[in-house]
Length: 181
Ligand code: FES
Image (tube, rainbow, N blue to C red; front, side, top):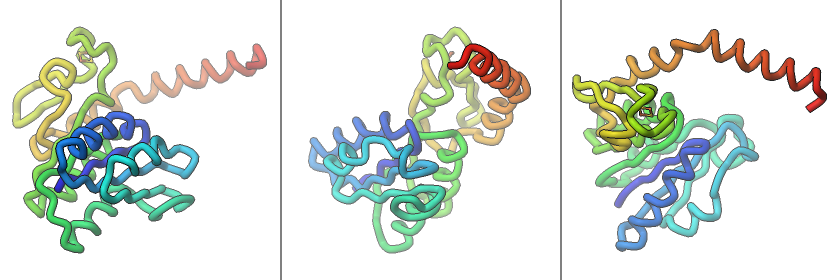
C-alpha cells in the first residue's frame, strides 16, 4: 500500500504516480491539499485512481482543516501500513511530510520538480544537498529519499532573493494598475 500526497499544483505531478500504482494493482491512499477549496486540483481524477482520497484545506473550506502532513500522521496512527509515501508540493510541505514519517521509519520519496527553473542542468536553481552530496534535481532527480534531503539549506536558499521577488511583484502590479489590466 502506498500513500501519494499532492500539495497545491504538486497534485498534477502526484496524479500520474497514483494512477501508475493503481494500474499495477497497488492499493493507493491519496491525500491532496491546498490553501482553500477553490485551489484544489484534480480532485475527481485523484479519486478515480485512489482506493481512498483524503482532502485537506488550510482554511477548512473543504475536507479536513489543516495540512496534508497532519492527515498523513492521522492515517499512520490509525494503523495504515504504508510501504512508501510519495509527496509532491511546496518545499515546506515536503519537509513537513519528511519530518512526519521520519520517526516511523517510513520510506518517503519527494519529487523536487517544484524547485526547478530551466530543467536543463544549466541555471542551478534546483541545486540541493542530498545525503551530504550536491545534486541537481533536474539532472539527478527529481525524486529523492526525503529523509536525506537537506531541507533546511534548501529553504534558506529559496529565501535568498525574497526581497527582489517582492520588488518585482510590486513593479508588475503597479504596471498592471497603470495600464488597467
Ligand atoms: Fe536549472 Fe536544474 S532547473 S539546473
